[in-house]
Amino acid sequence: MIIRSATSARRATGEPATLRPPWLPSWLPRPPRLLRSPRLLFAVGLLVAGTGLFTLYLRQSRIAPFNADGASVMLQADAMLHGNVLLSGWWTADVSFYTTELPEYMLVEAFRGLRPDVVHICGALGYTLTVLLAALLARGRATGRAGVVRALLAAGILLAPGILGGTQVFLENPDHAGTAVPILAMLLLLDRAPERWYVPVAVCGVLAWIQVGDKLSLVAATAPVAIVAVARLVMLGVRRSPLSEFRYDALLLAAAVLSVGVARLAEAGIRVLGGFRLTPLPAGLRAPLAQTPANTRMLGQMIMLLFGANSPGRSHQQIEIITRFHLIGLALAAAGLAVGIATFCTRRADRVSQILVVATLATAAAGVFSTLLPSLAYAHEVAVLLPFGAVLAGRVLPPRVPARWRPGWVAFPALAAWLAAGLAALCFAATWAPMAPPDQALANWLAGHRYTEGLAAYWQANATTVTSGGMVHVAPITAQATEARHWEASASWYDPSRRNVNFVIAVADTSASPGGLSTAAVRRQFGRPAGQFLVGQNVIMVYDYNLLTRLGGRGLPGPR
Image 1: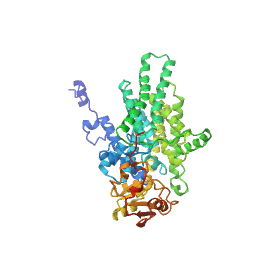
Image 2: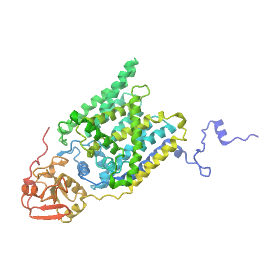
Image 3: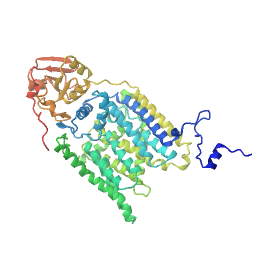
Image 4: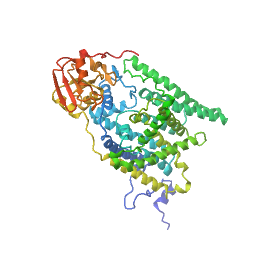
C-alpha cells in the first residue's frame, strides 16, 4: 500500500499546494490565506513603517518653534474650509502652495481645528510621505532582495533629518520641501506605468498642478522631464532606432511644454474668478558672475545642512557624532549622482534616473546663478536635493556593488548597522523637549482680557491668531504701521465695516525682537494710546477708536 503525502495528493489532483512559509515556526498555526498574500504583507508593512516614522517625525517637529509662516498657511486652509475655496481677497506670498501643501493642511485642520500643532502634524506627514515615496521610487522595478536593498538605501539617507536646520526645513512650515511629494509621485508613475499615451497626459496634468502651487517645480520637474525627453530622442536618432520608439519621449516632451501653458491658464482662471493674488517674484533674480563663487560656497553649506552633516556648534557638541554619521548619506548621494552622470548616455540608463540627474543639476545651478541663496536660512529653496540624491543613490549604486559582496557577508550587515544608527539618531531627536508656541502667553493674555481685534507686525500677527485658536484675530501691517501688509493676508481683515480693531502689538526693544513694531511708529500713525500694557517683551497699545479707519492699503486686490 502506497501512502502519499497531502502535498503529493494535491499535486496529483491539480490542487494548488499551500506550503508552510519558511519563516513561520513549526509550533505556530499556519496563517489564513489572505494574510499570506505578499502584496497585503507589503501594504501592512508599509503602513506600520509609515506610522512609526510619522510618530517620530512629529516628536522631532515639535522641538522647532511655531511661527507666522505656518500660521499663515493654516489661516488660508481655514478660509478654504469655510467656503472661500479660491481664497478670494487674499494676498499670498510669492509661492502659494495652493495645490501642493494647502490641501494637506485643509485635511488635517478639518480634524484638528485651528491650533499650532497642525503645522507639526503636516510637516511630519509630508516628510513621512517623502521617505516612503523615495523608497518605492528607488526600488524601481527590482524585486526580491535587490529591490529591498535599493529601497532601504534611499530610506536610510532620508531616515533621520538633521536636528539643527533639518527640522525647520523638512518638518515644519511649507517651504518647498513638501513639493518633493507630488514630484516623486509623478516620477513613480513614469517608472511603473507602461509606455502608453495616457501616461504623458497624466504627467502633463500633474506638472501643471504642481506649478500652480510652487514655481520651483519648473526647475525641479518640468524642465528635467523635457530635457531628458530631448536627450533620449537624440540618442534614438544617433542609434537610428525605428520611428515607433520615438513616440513616447516625443509625447513626454510635449507634455512638459504644454504643462506650462496649462498652469498659466489655471492661474489666469483663478484671477478671473476673483481668487488669490500671488506676490510676484522679485526682479533681478540672476546673480552677477562675481557672486558665483560665494553662491557655490553657500550651496555647499546648504547641502551639508540638508543632509544633516552641518557642524552643530559648540553649544550642541552632543550631536557631533550624528552629523558625522550623516556624512555617509551625503557620500552615497554624491556617488549616486556621479554614477548617474557617467551612465547618462548609456543604454542601461533608465528615464527616471536621468530625470533625477538633470533635476539635481538644474536645482543646484539655479541656486548658484541666482540671488535665492543669500544665507543658510534659505536652504529650503533647494530642499529637494535631499530626496533626489537619496532616490538616485538607491537606483544606481546597488547594481554596481561587486557580485561577491551581494550575498550578505559584507553588504547586508553594513546596511543593517547603518539603518540602525539612523533610527537611533531619529529616536534621539524625538527625545528633545518640545517647544511651546512663542506667542502662547501673549495669546492667553489677550483672550483673557477680551482684546479680540488688533494689529501687529507679520511675525506677531498670524501666529497670535492661530495660537489663540481663533479667539483673537490680529492682522499684519507694515513696519511703519501705516498700511496693511499685502503678504499672507486677507483684505477682509482690514474692512472697518466688518471689524473693530482697537489695539496694536508693539515690542519693547526692536533690537531684541527684530521684525516687531516700535512704539514710536505706532504713536506716529495712531496717536497716543488710551492704555498700554507690557506682556513679556510685547507692548499692548489700546485705543478707543477703530484703528482701521487710519490704515492705508486695505482695499481688495485689484486685477493684474
